[in-house]
Length: 168
Image (tube, rainbow, N blue to C red; front, side, top):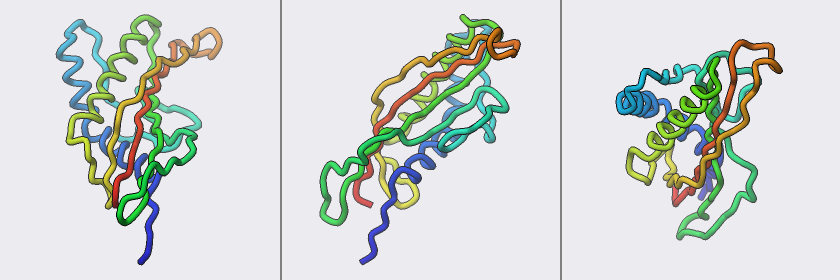
């Protein structure tokens, strides 16, 4: 019997795929619900990155990566262990107005959280089943245009999900 360890990379890829599929419609729902003139654009298909990016060419941008963990193996199932790790969904956006940027990031974060929860919790992805559980979301730092030489503020928002691989 060959054991295939489908750990962090598969979970990151599955999370990115789910965001690409569901985030645009969630953003559209948030825009329609708020109807206050502040329209959040959906990231293009090229603006989703696994494991990081050295330079962000466009905003908004989504990065999904595995956070440093102990690669916990919480229990063993009948045929394999159960792997658990934290995944970070980092959202980046830019706007010339700092207050508007804050609202954009809050709405983008809400849409991302809802996008990852809008299907059944057990995700069948690439031969493994993952359960994503929301852990926390943290507003990130904002880069001041006077320090960056840009004409806009750049901000981030971090969302953490716990991914658990069940038998697969």
